[in-house]
Length: 136
Image (cartoon, rainbow, N blue to C red; front, top):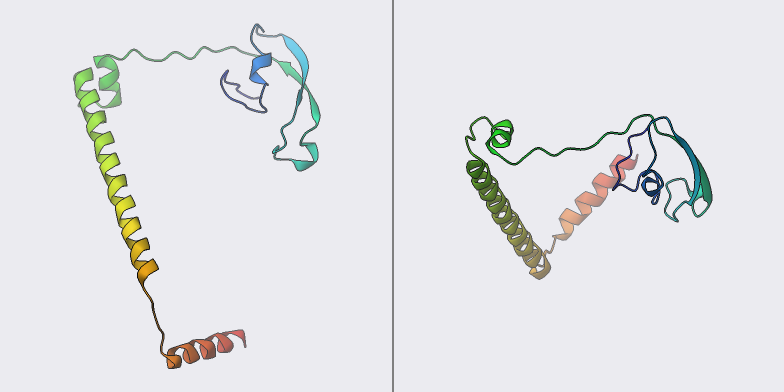
């Protein structure tokens, strides 16, 4: 048993498009071509037959955006405006944090690219000796 969402390509692209109009208890057979990148390589780019039986049809209902929804998200929110303000603040903070991390990463990359590190020969010899000891 699988749950199929109308806008999902599961199990293969085109599968969900075969289902509209079907009712609970109905069966349908159809064929589709499996994509080149199908997980099982031996089946990729081959025609597959599907036999489907609809057991149940559900409708997704999104909640209304109102103060009750805001309170469901977090009991501290008394109004939708307070939820929106917090979401906006969180998104801004996340964007600032990402910008800071990206900036730090670029700085580190620039330092690494412009740096030259020379190891004393004795250090290299000690590392070679350590690696040889590990192999034995």
